[in-house]
Image (spheres, helix red, strand yellow):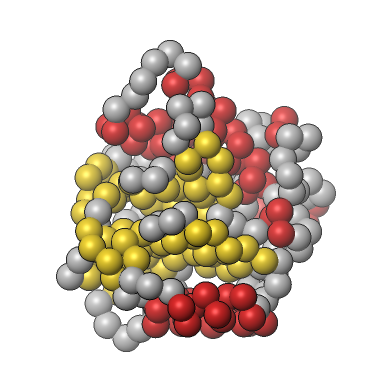
Length: 251
């Protein structure tokens, strides 16, 4: 299973040890990695085992304290092992705001995303979902400027609509605010720090971790919760139906 990492903090925070532990899990997630740090929007992605990357090792030794970071290690279920299929995915909306997304899961219900097969640069279901989100966002932006609360509502509504029948552990980041969601039990935790909060699929040390709330979108800015959506009914429960569907997926 892919793994997610996120940091939202109000001041620069040393996350070197957390990231080293996170990327050490690449032995079980060997099909690529990505790291986006917030200070200068530095993005590093490679389609290889994170522990085999000299570039990542150098980056982790040199990384300065950060206020924002998201990271991903990939276990390929849909899509080939290529750089284009590594997360985070990054795009600008029509207002010029840059959005990033990391996803741990599978999109089984492809009704809304199948049309992006010919538009994506890679061949993952995650990228198709991100392209669909950007189109939804742009449709709203075409009607006029939106405030911070309206951005949250767009993200929340999108996730609530697409969570049923899909595994949707996901983090969006819009340059200011981080939006976090999970819908499979025991697959995303968080830890409060003095200056913010970190998120991880698996606990990265021995203390202070709690399970992230289920089926609820929560937004964080400068390390503090700013918005919280209502719990929805889109919990993902793996069944033989979904496993069989995954085996049959060719897109």
